[in-house]
Length: 412
Image (cartoon, rainbow, N blue to C red; front, top):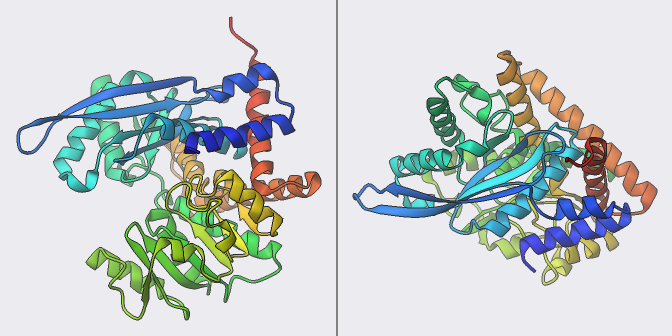
């Protein structure tokens, strides 16, 4: 089953449960708009190479679309479509005035120079410029993109419009209208969800054993915050594998080591493990923060964690979901767990439109309040309907989008 098929399967389950109107059901199965563009650039050696770029806007019933831009060799239309749909649900669940979007370029940025990536970004922005804007579609960083990428996108868009438009993207540098707290936002949201999950399980954070698959921006921030609260982070991994220490890993030292050496594997006082071995570790909390489909019908019975918080999008397949629910694993789904990024992106967008910026304490307080409130709503619905938290999250998200469509009606 592909990632898109997996997302659509979950959607159909939820549509049946809430008895979704047939017309709205069909509309939400397909994106509002899907763009495929050629992105030709001159490489450093003088040759011209053509890349394929995508931007999918899933739904606009609740407002302009919002979603990240990723650079990766596996980017394709199906993946981007699935992620755009998840973004719609995430925005609706968090009660943000957005629909979902996603974009990307099929490329390997690790094999490209900084100047090549800049040319790629500026040309891609030019190719999709008619479809984006602060009131139309607002991109943000994602896999292998960052604040610099967003600065280039904002500059390219602004140069073509003739004046500076800060709100066209989020996740920008502070000097260009970025928001305090944005870089840590998704990982901090994951941390808040671990904190709330521990309360549900009747335990404290201090002493909890944690394994984290994926030590990028999301995984590393969550690891640092959990480590600072006394959790014992026993394993982390990157794309090439991971490290394990039953007694716990000093996350601050590891982050500094990675900044200096770039590799996880040669950190001191640890054993090396594979990503598959990490998922099967005996731990209290498992955070899959890498890519989709990591826990599936083939390895779900190896999972020993009591709490799973999805830092990545779609890391658990629907078949595995049901097994974990039957085993009373507390699973916090992606559209809630990793929503911190889009929430603070929303804060950044609002600040850009107002030309008025908030302090970091205020931003973090608002983020935590929003996520905890939604967490409690989902927990309540889950208990009331005797359903898993993912289904409860989707039911809330799909219901809110459906309400927006009904209120707006069908034009013409």
